[in-house]
Length: 351
View 1 (cartoon, rainbow, N blue to C red):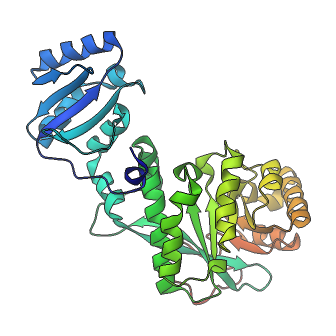
View 2: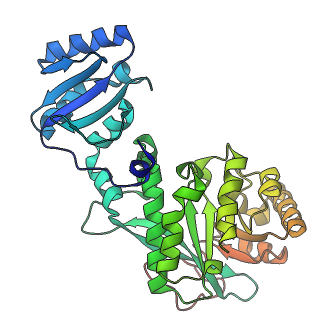
View 3: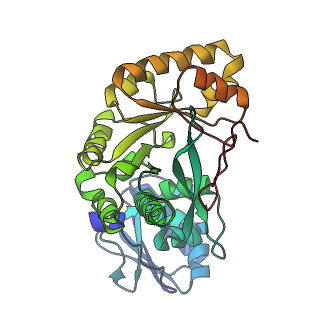
C-alpha cells in the first residue's frame, strides 16, 4: 500500500466482486487451481499469474477463504487484494494472510476504520502527596458498537496489517478526549507502537495537528512505548523520540525491567519518564531480587534525570516500599481503576 492507505481509511468490502490472488510459486499455483476447480469457483488467471476469483456475496467470499486454507497460501510471497469487477480497492497487493484476517473479522476492521472505541483513564499519582499527576489513556469499547477485548483488538490489528491505522486512531482519540476531560497542567500518558510509525516526520503529522487543533499544551503530553511492540530498532525509536521532543512533548519507556525494555535501553534512549513493570512491582516489599532490580533502576534514573513511575501497585506495602525509595509517581488498582471520568479524590492506601 502507499503511505496514505497504510495510515488511512480501508474501503468497505464489496458485496460481490473478485478476490485477486498473486501466486509466484508454480506448485502453489497448481494446488490453487485444483482447489478452485474442486469447489467450482469461477476464476481466470492472467499473464501475471494473478487469479481473479469471482464471488457473489460476502457469505460466498467467506466460504472461498475457508477453502483456500492457510497452508496453501501462508507464504508472505502470496499477495492478495479484492475488487469490484476491475476496480481495485488497494494501491497494491498485501500478504494474503493479512487480507484473510481482515475479511474473516470484518467487524473489527470496522471498529478500527471508524474509530468505534473510546478511552478510559487511569490516574497517575504523586506518591509523596497523593495528588493526581495525570492519567493514562486506555482503549475501551463504545456501546452499542461491537464489544472487544482491547488486547485482542491490537493483536488482530498486527495480524491484519492495520496497526498503523489503529495506533493513529487511538492517539488522536486520546488527545481529543483529554481536551474535554482534563485541565492544563494535567499530564496525559498515551501509548504508541513504534513499528506503526515507519516515517516519524510523516506519520506523526496527524497526531501533532490534533494537539494543535485541540489546543493542548505539548508539555502536558507523554507518549509512551508499549512493551508488546518489542524494541528491536533502538535507532528508529530515537528518531520518534526526537520528533516528539522537538515539539515539546515528553516521551516514556513502558514496562521497564521486563522483556526488551532493559536498563541498558533506558540509558541509550534517555526518555523523560520510565514506568517500572508491574511484574517487578508485584510483592516487591517481600522479594529481595526485585528490590535489588528496582534500586538499580532508581540509581540509573537519578543519574540520567529520568522520572520514574511504579506501575501496577495493588497493595499498601508496595506503595510504601516505592515511596521509601523516593520513586515519585505510581499507578495501579490500589489508587484507581480505569474509568470514564477523572477522579475527584484519591484516598491514601485505599482499596
